[in-house]
Length: 66
Image (tube, rainbow, N blue to C red; front, side, top):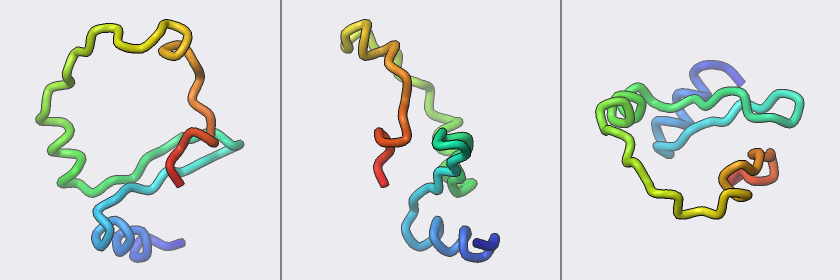
């Protein structure tokens, strides 16, 4: 996949591309506008709404939405 294909996918679908290496997510590619919007919005601090064992659970490739 070349850079033009990546730009087309992100531009048309407004999504992101997750790069996986050794069955682990290592990189997320998003548009610059999405990056800037995320950067400008302060993270919402959430109280511990998840059980502790779920918070500490490691993310697996099967958990990703694709």
